[in-house]
Image (cartoon, rainbow, N blue to C red; front, side, top):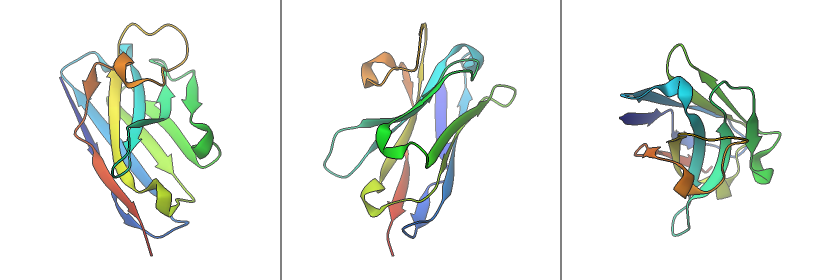
Length: 125
């Protein structure tokens, strides 16, 4: 089972990035997917989640209206489109997969079984 994030990098405040997470080794279409981030010296926090069919999404209050999670079950990829980025959103961004989820995407890390290694996003001028 593997999750590989890509698309991170250096972006100016107010800029945009699209992160991708490619899954392999498990039945991607059966899993709820989530994006989390971990700023330097801080705990990992929920950013966005999407249920297995893509019908239900949830976004942290701090990113609502600026970030959008989506998935392509034909390609086994989940995306995070980020816009109007702020310097305080500098972090390592991780994707994660959760099985047997009933209801909206969980916000706590313990619900997720598989994790990627993360991709660095730096928001700076």
